[in-house]
Image (cartoon, rainbow, N blue to C red; front, side, top):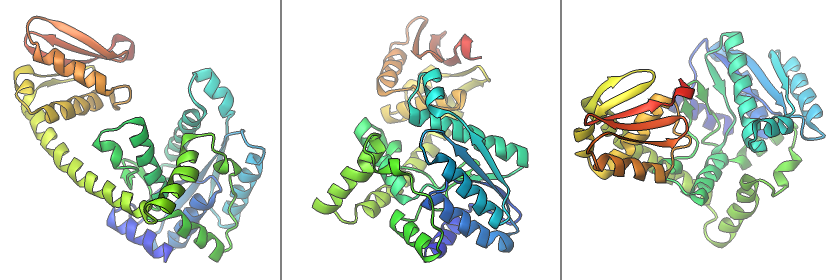
Length: 330
């Protein structure tokens, strides 16, 4: 049943095509081993070239055993395996960021490295439906707009997530039925990280006290929000084309009067849209920054500017609105 569900996900979202070269991110846990096992079974039908990328974070005592397990699984199934060892705790301290963020940065940098070195088309990540719901709950706790309720998408550029419609309980059952014997990360049961607290405390409590089907309930909510976001983003994209004056690598200039004529929601969405188009991300742009930019644009007399965060500068000049990369970011 799980394999059929994954196949339906692949077809619904057009995740793979015949002759694809795919890098699979494999930790050795139930999710990634299930994904690898299913892709191996599809290899001949789709004429796929598969490559595995495994990162040893050098944090857990059993990390070396995880690495050896993945290597042996790949040898047994004739899949090339690429391994990177990184002291993530050390890197987190050097970069002055959290361990989770440092680990994620290392992983995705390596996945892209393997993709480029193998000439692959896509990177398969083993996020499941539970992961997506946990992300939604975390976003609500932190404070989020509607985009944060979408969760983890099935496809994002070169990244595909074939297990995103599958629940963790079904993945674990698949492992038992196919004698995969995946590695278990014992830190998942430790309620140190916020995600673990959501997974091990909040969701079980909601299931017990409020809604035993909370995973599917939130997943359906995410689908509804995604449809609405697509509709609004299409509107924003069309308006952007109308108010755009000049678009360059280091700045974007739009018609200030036309910007101010839009509904407040569209102006807010437009700020996110332009920032993402210029910077490649909206990380660092928060609600208070949006409000400050809206206020700045409303008082359109003279030349003014503000710096929402150090990489971005927003300028009002000659009755035009500029979004500029800071000089240090060019």
